[in-house]
Amino acid sequence: MSGTGLAGRGVVVTGAASGIGKAAATALAREGAKVLVADLRQEGAEAVVEAVRAEGGTACAVVGDLSDQKVVDEVVTTAVDTFGSLDVLVNNAGIMDRLSAVADTEDAEWERVLRINLTAPFLLTRAALPHMLAAGRGSIVFTASEAGLRGSAAGAAYTASKHGVVGLVKNLAVMYRDKGVRTNAIAPGGTVTGIQVDAVPGAHGPAAVGAYAANIGRVSTAEEQAAAILFLASDAASNVNGVVLPVDNGWAAV
Ligand code: NAD
Image (cartoon, rainbow, N blue to C red; front, side, top):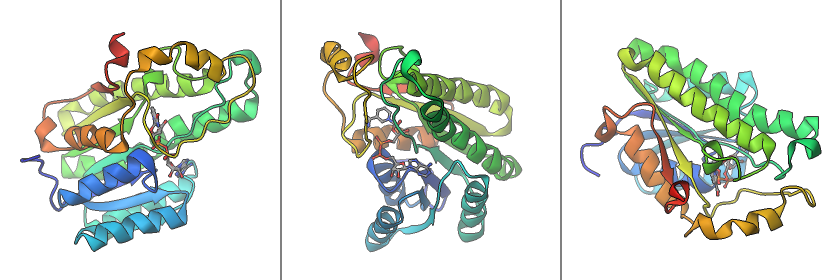
């Protein structure tokens, strides 16, 4: 993609040890961005950093749980200290629920999914914003989901968390539109990654998913999702703000 404006930019990608985040970190580094890989998984994060460096790119890693404010602060401080700026934040890390309906959702499942999928990106965005506002520019991209657009793509906790992400994206887009910070999201449909589903029996289990599987269409590669993240992060999308872009083979249109 020409005119991305990403060369030399300081970028944070969360959940970048695997799947969509890994593909996004790789794609952004290939555009010349300096990429901080943030993830729970040390081995995977270090492997991505090594792969970027092997291609001549710039990367470093922060390993930890992004629902912990201390880890969030370390991510932002490390990016700013190492790269000199934090220009792009990709809030991508997330986990699935157990495809459970409300009556089958335990407190622990609800709290864990909401904490990682919605609160963690809120914490990171809040920590990153002062740097973007001081610079008068920034691009934030969230990985939402088809479950942020419809009621039948997952269980109660995941669906609520991703609808929350969509609301957060739109609020950020409006609140900071006059300050040079754009916020957008991708809404992936089914995508081949390492994400795990430990479904509860019955309720909204895999059998229910199977009933609407025909609507899902062709599943994506992680690289197809990363291409959309790259576009939204880049100057090619310089007046795109508050958009939730489905990357789903038309599932949202069914
Ligand atoms: P993945 O499991 O391959 O990657 C997710 C990464 O996030 C992992 O490396 C994991 O270690 C990391 N992570 C999870 N919790 C974390 C935490 N608390 N702190 C730090 N890192 C953490 O899965 P993926 O499919 O690439 O998921 C990326 C995003 O895409 C998620 O937000 C997910 O909800 C969304 N999504 C995925 C699909 C799909 O079909 N795969 C569809 C729609 C949306």
